[in-house]
Length: 599
Image 1: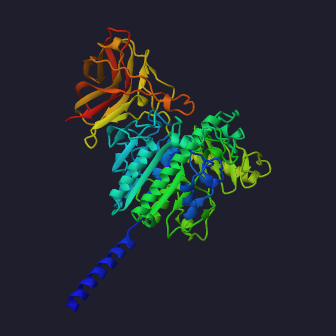
Image 2: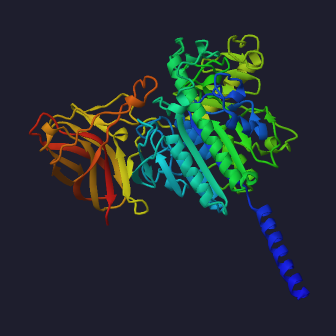
C-alpha cells in the first residue's frame, strides 16, 4: 500500500515538475496596445497633472519607460512601421485614405513572423493599412480581426464594424468593446502562445466618450495648457490657441483608455499570465490638438519633436527590471526586431529591416550602444534626430538636450553637425523616398477564394457629376447628391477570380426617389435593379460629440440592398455605379458596394 501511495505521489510530483518545466520553456505572450492621436503629454507618467492614468503609468513603474521614442506624424505610416520594421515609404504607404494607406503586398508583417513561429494572432481595432484582401489584416498574419480597417470612424457607440470580413454591430463604447474582444481572445488562448495587437482609435475625433469619464472634465480647470506652439506643425506655421472643450474631451478619452488598460492587466493577473506576457504601450503620432505636450514644438502632422515623440512603455516581469529608463533614441521601426528577440522568434522577412532590436536596452545587457539616426517623414518633409540634435524639415538645427522646445537654431554654431545631418537626410531621401510612388495606380482587389467578400467603401471610390462626398475627410464618408443618369460612382478595381458575384449596395433612399434603376458594371459585365423600398434614416453622431468634429462626416444607418448577381471577368478596370432611370428628384446615397464571390 505504501509503495502504491509513493508511486502515486511521485507521479503527481513528476507531472507538476513537467508542467513547471513546460511553462518555463514557453515563450512569452505579446500584448501590444497602440492608441490614436494621443500625444506624449497625455499621460500622467510624463507629468501631466490634468489627468490621471495610473494603469498605463504602472507599466513604467513595473517595467521600462523609453525617454525618446519616435513614431510618424500621422496614423497609417506609424502602423506600417510597427508592422514591418521598415520606414513607411518603403512599404508604399504615402497617404491616410483612398488606397494610399496600404502596405505593399510583398511586405512581411510582425504577425506573419510570430504566426510562422507558432503563435496564435489577433488584431482588434483600427487597422488603417488596407481594407480589401490581400491588404486586409486577415491576410497580413492576423487569424482573427474585429474592428474597422479605415482611418477613422464616424460614431463610437455600437457602430457597424467588421469581424473577419463580415459586417457586424458593435456593442457599447468602441474602446470598451475592442478591449472585451482582446480579453476574450487572451482567455481563449491562455494555454497557447499568443500575439494580440490592440490598435485603439481614441482620442482621435470625433470626440466621444461615455458620461462616466467625461463628467470629471466637463468644467475642469486645467492647469497645464498649450503655449500656442503645439499647433505649428498642423497649421503650416500659424499659431492657434487651445480649444479647451476639445482638450477636456481628449483627456476624458485618455482616462477611458487607462481604465481599459487596467482591465487588461487585471485579466492577465486573473489568468496567471502576467509574468509571461510582454505588454507594450505606445501611440501613433503627436496630439491631435493644441494642448499640453511638454512644451515641444509640433503636433500631429508635424515632423518636429512634438509631432513624432511617443510614449513607449514595456512590462515583462522577471525580465525587464522595474523603473527601467531607456535613454537612447528608438523608433517604431525597432519594435518588430525587439519583440522577436525577446520572444526568441526568428525574423524571416522578404526585405531587410530598417529597425534594430533594443532588447539589450530593456534587459540591461547592452554594454555598448552605438550612435544612430532616426528619420521622420510626411508629405515630402524630412527631419532627422540624433541622440542630441534634431535637424528639422527646413534645415534648422536644434540642440534637444539644451533646447527641447526647439526655440534656437544652432546650425551656424554647429556647422559640422548640421552638414553631417543634411548629408544624412539627402542619403535617406535618395534611398528611402526613391521607393515611394505617390502616383498610386494600385487597383482595389476583388474576388479571392480565400476571402470571397470584398467591401468597396465610399472612401475608396471616386465621385463624378453631381455626386459629392458627405464630408471632406473621406475615411468615413458616403456619397450623396446623386440626381441624374449622367452621374457616376467608380472604383478602380482588379478582379482576381472570374466568376459569379453577388452585388450588394449599402444605401439610403428618400421616399420621393423610390423607383430609380441602378446598374453596376465592370468591363463588359453588368446587372441592374430597381429601388423599391424607401430607407431614409437621419444623420447621427452629433448627439455623442463632446467637441466639433471638423471635416469628418456624420453617419447614417445604411441598408444592404441586393442588387443582383453578375458574372465578372478577370481583369482590371472601373467598377461603375450609374442610374439608367431616374423618375424622381434623385437616386440614392451610397456607403459602399459589397461583392461576394459565389463560384
